[in-house]
Image (cartoon, rainbow, N blue to C red; front, top):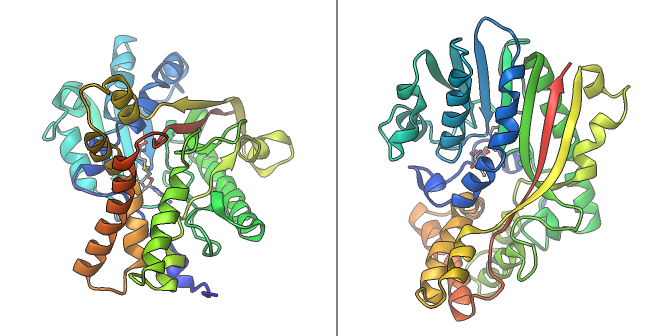
Length: 373
Ligand SMILES: C[S@@+](CC[C@H](N)C(=O)[O-])C[C@H]1O[C@@H](n2cnc3c(N)ncnc32)[C@H](O)[C@@H]1O
């Protein structure tokens, strides 16, 4: 059994997305999911706190590409409403995040110039913060609206390695309990930090990966389970002697998919720390966003080959998962690790080419609107 070593379980420096814009270019589904809650968020424009200036935060923004249009439309709505207050937008992520791409994108030096709101609207200021969202990141009561998409399933620390799978969805009951406990502590810390940051009347909108009422989660909505596929191919690397047992086991995602109940728990009781800090849950719902790559393939089966489908589908899984496998190989030379990771994704790709049926990455989100009272 591989013993946990504190420094290997600390995830903060290693789990960021693939850089240089790769993340947002290959992650159309995450953008679709964000765009789908635009109306819900835009409605709050007229209820923004009556502060001298407006401050917003995007927690776990990655390279900012997937939420750029969302923020453009939100700022546009504010200006159309006749609100000309200065606007500050703080992008937060881990220190290892690709903030260079993010700042270029917002300044209109990237691909989507039509949404470079920092240039398009006046009196709008873009800032970055490289400290994790489990802590307070802004001064007390200075945040008008917080937003986070597809990020808070990352736990601050892996409580253990999962011995026979790569993700907590395949953990044994004891491992699962350790992840649940860690995620509960983290969720409370996240909420208490936002409670301090938010101005009274401010809102926090978050859409997180989780497990819905039907037991569905990312890449597991019928058909093959994507995480089982990751495990199958990583295990086959081990069985073929390409990687060691330690490398197999340490590829454990630092993620926990909370159930709706786990997400809502801190709000259930008026005496809880979160309720006492002034947070109130206004709504919570689950949502499936179809895998856009699978959708496109299904609508174009006459024009698209399984190879073409696999070439669009595998990169969307790779954009956020690659660092987990690379980190498990961190004792190797980087070229060697690169080759092993390439051959791992190639195995998955070959399987999809052979029979694409049932391979997809539908998103399941738990969407919450929270108010600071
Ligand atoms: C899957 S990406 C989502 C990016 C973007 N919000 C979206 O919806 O497309 C998750 C992001 O959360 C970031 N992240 C993970 N743990 C974090 C933490 N503790 N604090 C801040 N960001 C974190 C990762 O680095 C990554 O950029």
